[in-house]
Amino acid sequence: MSEEKEEGIVLSVTPFEDKHRIITVLTKESGIATFIVKGISVQKSYLFSLTSPFFCIGEFVYRKGNSNILRFIDGSIIEELAFLRKDLTHLTYACKMGKAISVSQLPQKDSS
Image (cartoon, rainbow, N blue to C red):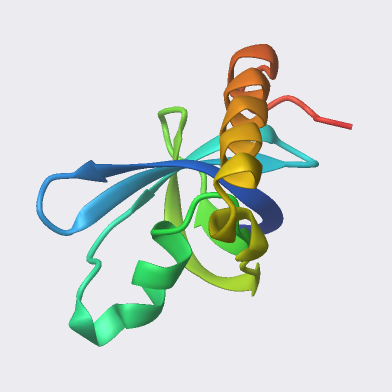
């Protein structure tokens, strides 16, 4: 299967087993996309940054499989949007917007 690449904003992060995380990302082309990021470790510290903060904009390289969860291959942070986490009011409204997007946007449907 071929690799694909998209930019998106991380809406949620869920720990999975010891060294894995499931991240939900809003992308323009695929709408809500869910990725499984495996093997997060000290040697792959950039994965901590990409899968820890909510509301960071990143680039995600992945492969499609048989399920709705996409297999994360590689990625990088484009913009951290740190200002959202410096003010409780900004963070509160960002969370509310993220929840609204998560429940209103269909998975893997164009979000434009």
